[in-house]
Structure formats: C-alpha cells, structure tokens
Amino acid sequence: MYLADLIQKFADVFVSTIGDVLPIVLIIFVTQYLVIRRQVPNLKNVIFGFVLVILGMAFFLVGLEEALFPLGEVMAKQLTDPAFLGVEDLNGKVLWQSYMWVYLFAAAIGFSTTLAEPALLAVAIKAQNVSGGTVSIWGLRISVAIGVGLGIALGTFRIVTGTPLHYYIIAGYIIVIIQTFFAPKSIIALAYDSGGVTTSTVTVPLVAALGIGLAGTVPGRSELIDGFGLIAFASLFPMITVMGYAQIGQLRSKNILSKNKKKDSEQI
Amino acid sequence: MISKYPKQLFLLLFGGFKDLFPIIVVVAFFQFAVLQQPIPNLFSILIGLLMVSIGLTLFIKGLEIGLFPVGENLAYDFAKKGSVFWLIAFAFALGFGTTIAEPALIAIADKAAFLAAKDNVISSTEAAQQAYASGLRYTVAISVGVAIVIGVIRIIRGWPIQYIIIGGYIGVVTITFFAPKEIIGIAYDSGGVTTSTITVPLVTALGVGLASSIRGRNPMIDGFGLIALASLTPMMFVMLYGIII
Image (tube, rainbow over all chains, first blue to last red; front, side, top):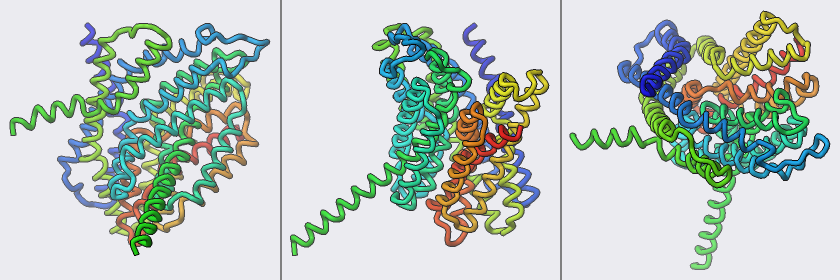
C-alpha cells in the first residue's frame, strides 16, 4: 500500500509540474516559431531535456515531501517549544538568550538546505562556465549557504526580540552598497542574483515552518505579522557573503602577487 | 560499453547524494543529540532521500541538454535578428507567465488577503479576499515582467547593474515608510519567492546568452542580474498595492 500511495503522489506531482512548466514551454516555442521563425536546434535533445527537468522536479518534490518536510516541521515545532527551551515568561517578555538552540538550528538548516537548492546549482554551473573557473561551483554554493544560514539565524533572533524587520533590511542594504564599491566588478551582478535564487523549493517550506512555529510560541508575537520576514533575510545575506567571497579571493591574490614581487626584488 | 551503464546508474542514484549529506547531518544531530528522539518512519525517509537524489541528478542533466541551450539559442537569435521590440515582448511574457502560476506566490497572496480581511482593510467575505489575492498576484507578475524588461534593456545598453539596484533599494526603503505595517513582511518575502526553480536557469541562460552575443558586453558583468531585478520589483509593487487598497 505504501508503494501505491507513493506512485499516486508521484503521478499527482508530475502532472502539476507539467502545469508549472507548460506556460514557459509555450512562450518559448511561440517565440521560436512565430517570431524568430527558425527550427530549434537539436529539437529531440531539447525535448528530452525538458522531460528530464520535469521528471527530476517531480522526483525531487515527492522525495522532499516524504523525507524532509514532515520531519523538519516536527523538529521546528519541538525546538521552538518553550517547555523544551526552558523559557520563562517574564510578564509577556522573554530573554533572547533562552533561544540559543533555535538560532543554531536556523543557521544549520539554512546552510544545509541551500546546498541542496537546484536553482542555486544551476546558477553556479553557469557562473563557473562563464567566469572560466574563477568562480567555482562549490565556492559560490558554500558562500551563498553561509549567507542564508547567517540570515535565517538573525531572522529568528528578530522574531524573538520583536524588533522591526525593516531596520535589519535597511542595515543590510547599506552593507551591500558599501561592499559594491570595493568588490571586484565581475562579481557584483552574480552576487545580486544569488540573493534571489537561494530561496526556492527546499528552503522556503522549512524556513516558513520555523518562522511561523517560533512566532506562534514566543509570548507577545503574532504568527501573521512576525512569522514573515525570514525569506527576506535569506535573500539579503547571500549578497554580502558572495561579495565577501570575491573580496577574500582578491585579497589573497594580491598578497601572493606582492610576495612574488618581494621574492623577485630579493633575487635581483 | 557495458561497464558504462552500471556507472551511469550509480551516478543517477548517488550523484545528488553529496548535496543532501549536510541536511542529513543537521537533522540527525538535532534529532539525536538535542531533542533526543528517534527518527520516525525511517524507511520512508530513506526512500524520500533516494528520490531527492535521483531528482536532482535528472534535473541538472535536463538543464544541460534542454533549458540552457534553448535559453542561449533564443538570446543568440534575438541578438542576430536585432528586433528589440520582440525581445522586450518576450522578456515581459517570460517574467509574467512564469510568475502568475508560481505556487509559492499563490500561497503568499492568500495569506496577505487573509491578513487584510482581519484588519478590516477589505471586507472579510470570500469573494473580497479572492479578489484581493488575485489582484496581488497580477501585481507581482506584472512587476516581474517589468523587471525582466528593464534587465534586458540594461544588458543591451550595458548600464551598470549597481546603480539600478541601489536606486531600487532607495525605492523600497522610501515606500516602506508609507506602507501599512502588516504588509511589509509579506512584501519583503515576496521578493525571494517569485523566482522559481525552472525560471532561474532559463532567465540566467537568456541573460548570459544575450551578453555573450552582443558586442562589447561581458557575460560575467552584464549577463547576470536579471534575477536580482526580478526579486527587487515585487517588494515595491506589493507595498504599493497595500497602500493603494
């Protein structure tokens, strides 16, 4: 019966994924044949590729539904439970220090789910190709993942303390703008992009469960007002860490250069 | 030739596994060491992990032979044909069409409608909430379409991305001060959720393809940035929607 259920779920998700991809396929083919009026090169391969993408998405989504989401939601609920954390309600206020496990879980789950994001992997593959290997797939993915981890941890801290969301976001924007002036020119567009790609299939459901669970259990917070905002953090911080990654790379290559120069002058 | 197939099968099953390993470590640590509880339904979890791994491998393979080449080819053909009008029409359709049906956006729009009804911004009838939610969805989808259009024009002209993004930030911050407090969180989140797993590779391939085929553009500097714009405009449009209604 388990297998029959699984096949049923897979069929449902497969059909709904086709529905998601259909508008894109339509736009592409209408443009290709009516506007450009040229045959798609390697049409057979392309169609096979689309089939693989849809199949892959369906496997991926059903797998997440089976393996990760139920467990992740239960864990988020248990970890934010005031009884587990030993939180004392001080007349409707709490000490933010009581929530250390939550911050740690937020950082760890943000980091690890980002590494499994297919959209980020796609952009990383493109970035490695285009940059000729200066930006590596794993370098980009890990710096984005660190950004998401930091962002979500800070986001849960914000929910616990109940401070206004836009102060954090504005402060983040200021950091991004300052970094933009110092970061290597070739990384800027990619860094900005990595903010938007990080949060999709894997991260959003888990992070939403964490945010809403937390906002529902911290005294004085409303699920509906304070539960939102974690995704915003997760899209902001990767910009900072990706530019940081490029800046560290730049510093290191400068150091090597100046060391080499030193060596050269010593040899002379 | 024969030895190739088991290797491919192995890659298919475990190729995506290294991407999942960190999640497994995190979940196991918190479940055993912190919460001190056994893992429920271990069998279905293992099956699920296997499926995620297969899915990731198939998805990436499909990108490489399907989505990436199609996006790049379109960009190349547009650049050769030189019809800016059709390129812009295509860019808008791509942004709008992929966003309007995005499940994450539908979920967020419904929540926003629920909130608005709770605060008596709109009447709490089902019809009013539905009208509010679909209005919001169209707003966001139009904003993503506009973003891709701006991004494509930017690639053609070679404008630096940072001025546009910083200008956008100033817009977001300014609007925040006038927006109803309840909508700010939703608006900020809507930026991150609009760009889906299938849109991202296609839009990236389009941008990089355009920048590579237009003379004087650098794919690294000019090719990326479309996603950034598509995550920025929804924040502004959602807050404006909240102010107007």
